[in-house]
Structures are given as structure tokens and as C-alpha cells.
Length: 255
Image (cartoon, helix red, strand yellow):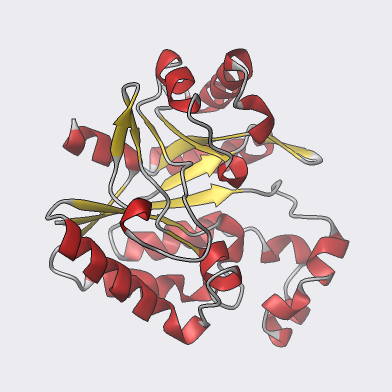
């Protein structure tokens, strides 16, 4: 079986990035969409992700930061509660400035748990800012898994898939991420499904029970490239040996 760990990092405050940021990247959107959509709605896509995944009977993991530039995770309180109520998983998107300080990670975890009302077991550091001491800290704080590790930005090989156990933490390397596909690997929109096919084929050659971790950022759904998310799910769900899982599901399977 090929397991897909499907997740979305929520990188921006709910109101979206500053207007100048959006205007400088307007070429990422179709002109008609850009003209008819409020700037803050271009980057805000949680309900749309839920609607798409619901059609495929899929649930994924959303990683939330606890503080945002000019924003706060409490702005997402209703979204987080709705996701959780409908069986999506909530994970912590730890700030890079926190990873060397156990107490800072604890405070972030507790702040997110004050919204969820239940234990957060999954972590991913913003910007994939990983270091070898992180799993030890996460284990002490009651996490079960992390997905912050990536060895390269411009290629996908066996190092970028599967999982390992470090200090009691299951580490899922990031395999396929929208930003790396578009920016560093220069994959064109019409070739994205082919890249998923190549990655699945590589996984099949490595292990019968392989894990491929996918990040499709919350803000990219309306962008060129990011908008093929529905086609990605159509492709993945058409594969007889593929199961799409939340991080918490994989922890249960791999224990």
C-alpha cells in the first residue's frame, strides 16, 4: 500500500497578506479571477478545501501557526472548530523562532489546544526549519509525529519519503510540496499529475507500505498550479494501491 499523508499549512493570517504582497504576485492568478475576487479571499481557502475533500470522502491535516504577522490563531477559531467537528486533523505549525526553546513550543501547543480542546499530536515547523534536537523536544511535550524534514528543494528521491523513528517521534519527510514543485523544480501546471505518478512509482519500487507526504498550502488553491488540487485527488483516488490519510491515522497504523 502507498499511503499519502495529505496536509495543508496555513501560513497567512485570516485577512490574507498585505495588499502590496498580493499585487506583486497578481500574475499567479488568472486576470478575470483576480479582478472579481476580493484580495483577502484569494488566499483564504479552507471551506473550499473542505468541500473538495468531502466529495472524495477524504480527510487531511491542517497545520496552524499560533501567531501570524498582524494576526492571531484565534482569528481562525471558527475554522479550526469546524474542521475538527468534521473530522479533519489539526496540527501545530511551530514558529521557526521556537524550535530551540522547549517552553516556547509548549506555549504554542497549549495555545492551539485551547481552541481544539484536545491534544495536538502532530507538528510541522514553518519554513521546514528542522534541527536534530527537535524530535527530542517534541516527544517531551507529548507529540507523536513531525513532518518538518526535507533534504533538498529541487529533487524527489527515497530520502524524501517513508518515515523514521527519532526519540519516540515518527518523522515524515516532506515529499511533494506545491512551492518546491513550482519554484525549485520548475514543474509546469500540466506536468504536476505526471510528477505525482513518478513519485508513486518510485515509492512502489521502494516499499510495499510506503508513505508519501504532500503539502498543498492553504493559500494556493486559486493560484496557477495550486488550482489542480481537485485533479490531484482524482488521480490519487483512482489508484488501487493508494490510501490518503491524516497524520494521526498513520501514527495508529505504524505503531
